[in-house]
Image 1 (tube, rainbow, N blue to C red):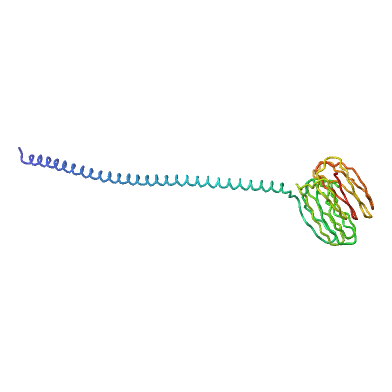
Image 2 (cartoon, helix red, strand yellow):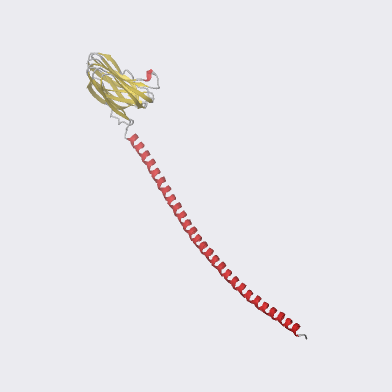
Length: 287
């Protein structure tokens, strides 16, 4: 064989072998590189798993917080409900207590000369007035209804000069009233609307001087009254029922000047007896 051809063949073969070795080494590097990449991937995955675990813990914590908040909210709601229930019960108890104790409208006023007071909220039923006046002219006290008619106004006093007394009258319309006082001197006035007053026993025998009221008494139909008056002006006795739907007995007595006599009036249920007088008087009934 030609020497140059032989050397060429040997050179080609050697190059192929070297190339093959080089390819295997590159493959190892590739594998090694692949392993490194795989390791990094595993690390990333591990990191992701760590984050996932942290997220799970966070979610669990959030869940616990949510449940805790829910329980706290439920507790607060229960507490508020209990508080509201307690407040409502207290309000109902106070309202019932006020009714059973007989508490109603009650106010006191004072002044000098003519005066008006707005905003009196009254209910149908008796109203009791105690008053005094120091002057030399009229002392007239009227409750003027705001939304009603003039015949529903309530007249409590019509005196001249110095006066001290009390009166009972009937409020027929519920709503706002204006207190109107016509006077020329110093005066004092107290008003009361008791809702459940205690009744006094029958038969009764009372005495006094000037305008006043007595009772209330429990009546049951026609009742005979005995009365006397030692004065110069009117002696008038009227029944003022606690229940405004009951019919009173106006004019049990309606006399002028000195008087002594007997009268029968029909009174049903519980009622006060109102006396208008300018002198000493006696009144009895129910025997």
